[in-house]
Length: 232
Image (cartoon, rainbow, N blue to C red):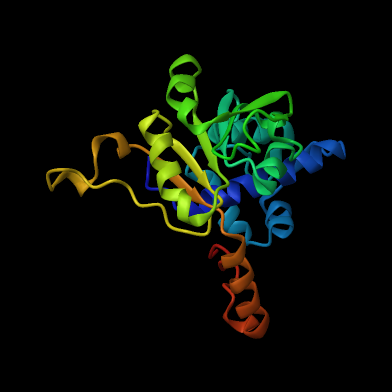
């Protein structure tokens, strides 16, 4: 498989959301032009993004909505269950836990953790908030695929390390700071420690998004334009 840009995966998520909306409207077929208009990109970009993963449509007839939706669900790995723990059960952590729709995509919250005595022991969505010291034993008894970090920035690195030490391979970081993999004791082979190999970190930084938004409101001509149409 060719190297796939991160932006292409983000667009697949957008295409899937559009297809779900079309399905709710009982629309059975769509086209790259229609998807492009709804997604704010070019038809060429839609075709290019989908081509990374195979051939899903028929030339001149477009795409069957349920079939393309099913294929994107498969490509994105949303046809299986993903067990998630949330670390940091303050206001943000509780908002994430209560955000509707996660279970629709097979994301199941299986554990909640914090270090505050005032939070540990509380019930959130039928789960009891545990202490971070319980995390290693919890992951030994329960498979965990992802950890969401909703902790203050000064605690994010230690919390991320605790997740990695517990064998969690995917981290969604809501703290406004950069998570640094632990360095290897001996240089070489990407210079990171063994437990960090294969760990994926995604950052969700609301403040960074607001800063970008402020810049582009003042400089709209500098915002990336849609890719040009495929030449004839």
